[in-house]
Image 1 (cartoon, helix red, strand yellow):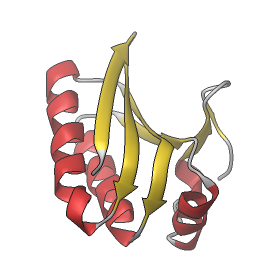
Image 2: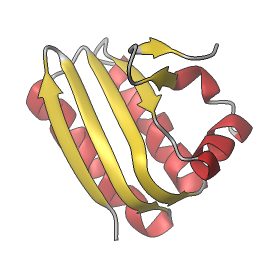
Image 3: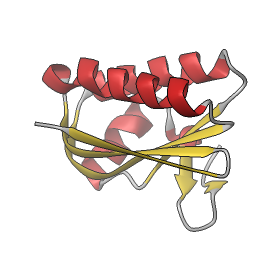
Image 4: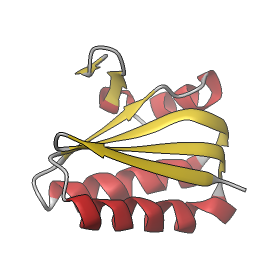
Length: 110
């Protein structure tokens, strides 16, 4: 079972994912991101993947949907702290440009 933990500060919404982001969890994850984005209307949203134990292509779909939704409002989407397995999935999907260093709040690759 996957859990989401939204946190908002100074225009930045961070949503931390904990557990497995797979097909069974994807719809709930997207609902959580959408609800938090609608509540806070952030300028930037960071998806913190540090608590994931697994992510498959369903997680990629959640990230892409969230990016599209946030882009429509002028907000930026970034991804931080993916475990190695999730990082490989993101790289294979061509999404490594969204990765950000959580300490510096800067994109780590382009």
